Structures are given as structure tokens and as C-alpha cells.
Image 1 (cartoon, rainbow, N blue to C red):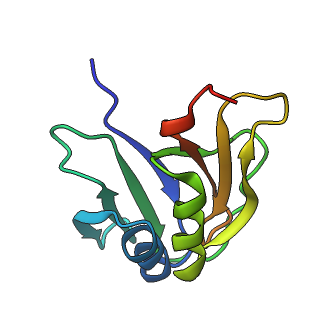
Image 2 (tube, one colour):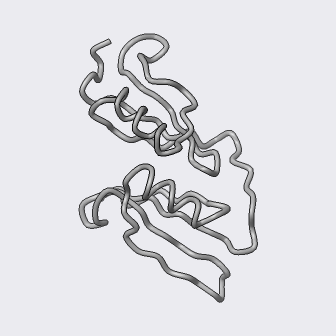
Length: 132
């Protein structure tokens, strides 16, 4: 068994693709329109689906806003230097909603950014994991 993807609904596919591909550096792996269902699926990730978990962006053509609810937490990405990564992402227009630093009760250094739909993405510093 292997984890394949996480699906999130997006209200503007072009804006979401710009964020995940241009800001975070993921690649658009595949995209397909489903006219009979009035939706588009776009899969993005840091590598092909055979070896990597990816994100499925689902765009429902007639829905332009979602309630994120309070059950979903966040996506998480490992980075090598959280301070440099946040500086780079900020220059690319990313919204930093929690500046980099140690977790509240000590330990791993983390930060949070937000995608155009309000989904939170945790950045975890792999080089300092558990050192603080």
C-alpha cells in the first residue's frame, strides 16, 4: 500500500496552479477536463506519481467558493533551510501566516504559508528537526 495523493478543492484553477507551480516549484503532472461532470482535475507535485505523493487540485466549474471547515488541518512540506525558504517564498508573493521559528513548546522549527484558497501549508525545517 502507498499514499498516492491528497485532493483539495480550489475556486480558481489558474491561480492555484500559479501558486503550487510558480511559487512552490511543483510541476503540473497531468490535467484533464470532465465536461459531463463540469470539473477539472490537475495533479501537481515535486516528482512523478510513480515515486511521489502528489496533490490533486479539483476545480468544479460552477463552484467559486468553499467553506474550508474546521476538520482539515494542513499540508506539510519538508525544507532544508526554513528561514531562506520563507524569504524566497515571500519574494514570490506567498502569504506567510506564521513566521519561521521553533514550535510553541520547543522542538522542530516550522512556519506556515497559505495558498490562494486559504489552505494552510506547514513548512518543516528538516535540517533542524528536533534540535530546538
